Length: 229
Image (cartoon, rainbow, N blue to C red; front, side, top):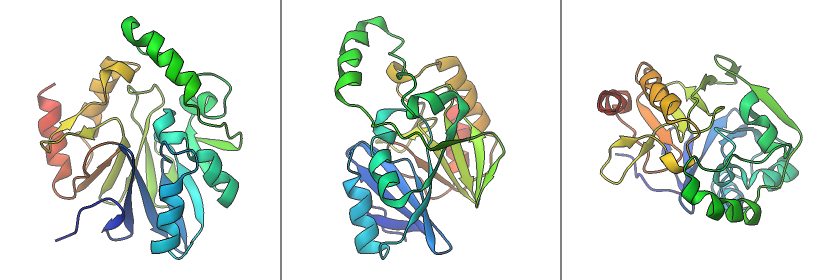
């Protein structure tokens, strides 16, 4: 049985790194590495450390961003500066990542003053060399899926039997599957429809942006969750 803990290889060629409360994943592709999301640490310390100790300081050739939120993108500048990786994000989230516009404030007005302060205090340094990808494109072994809702441009990446949905489907402490937090979800209606979309895909593993990864029968678990919302 796989030793399921952050900072380890949890499936063949798939490595799980945890940055505070955010999940990042490294996948091996030939001699290079592909990173899904970059975390909250602006120096990407966890990623650099893991690659040095566990992956022979191999190069990250591509970075796939599930969405523009700072907890998934703040390490981007440091990683791109080191590896000159190709970076991919959706058209809808692109302008936030490159610093052309700011991340939207929460839907609930009561939280907006706090998030306004945090948005200005905890920033991701923009990277301008960012490419746009979209539904059904193939990036090496990954199929791109548009999962709108948490952000309007949220993406998921399907590699064989492993789905990386970002915050479109996250796991909870009881092993269940939830939508991303409503407070920072741009459209709950779209997020709900996206979970129904994910339920129609076939995959064994769900490697989400938050919570513990699910390594077996994950698509069945999503079907159960989608039926309840």
